[in-house]
Length: 471
Image (cartoon, rainbow, N blue to C red; front, side):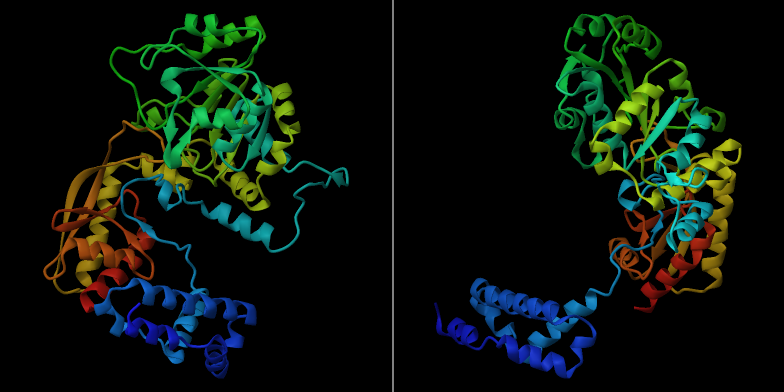
């Protein structure tokens, strides 16, 4: 080791010295002594690691004095007070963007969360009987009314719903599923892996593009636990294809006394085809086929909070409720409150696309999107932000979230170009704004897709663009 490194290592600040400087600056008002001590040790250790790792020419740039270390510790502790989970503006045109939180909640859901959270609630207390109740009862009546199900159960997401249902129906038994439905969705969620964790045995049938009813029938044996259908939420197989429809599968299951389970994935409670989108089977339609149990998400096409909803035959749902895994996967009072408020909008189906933001974004007429785009441009032009030019352009948006994968939704984008700031740098600056603006980049301009930008977010866009020009 060279002399310069030895000298720097020898000059590393003592922990007590750094803490002494911090105490003079009132660090005890910001964090406990344990946090300050741990942070000091981390800062000094990282400095030691840097001394040992950097190239010789970089050594003079390293500051090893106690004051510099104290500033670093204070900055780290100050950063602990900055929220990392932030509200942002989704200008990407991906409506149910998984990375951006999927479906925004409606005002009624937000108000219900606040109301329930500010005090105690009857989460598991039956007010009529004055005794312990079930948390699912608060929304199961609504879900059953909207879907025609005999009973319902809610867990924390659809992956949990699939895991719990498979474990209940096919623990150490075979689950028959088409090879073309062994899907993988975002975050490496794979049906075969979930089946393994559920302790069910995968019995794949058919081929990638063609699976017939006879394939399922041949696979049925003494150790068959369930017949599983999986909605290919984020892709479609087209061309020379064939799949077994639900009614024949249900009849096959009933003949052999085997439950049929349909994982719908996104789930949908209204007819999207009536709004000009491709047909997506509704939960009610699927249950009407006689299928025993259906699972779907709460924060995708339904437009509510993250949840996994299990509906179907009351005897099967009762078995799922009794599964010990259910307690580990159950939802909290905030999700229940938000889900209840969201579901109420579906009691009059025509209200849902107007009241739920994600559904509105999916179904809004193009003329209304264009009108909102013009309002944004007019607002930005009135602010006279220098060096910016704006245009309207037709484009396509996407449903996202593993929903409607082949649907290109017509949209309008506002293109913005800065005379002095490259588009890549503008994108980064917008992403680091006080309220981040997440955009698309197209060569020398940024694109704001107005299908996912609400009018009450225009101010955030204006502030971010003004900051870019100011710098």
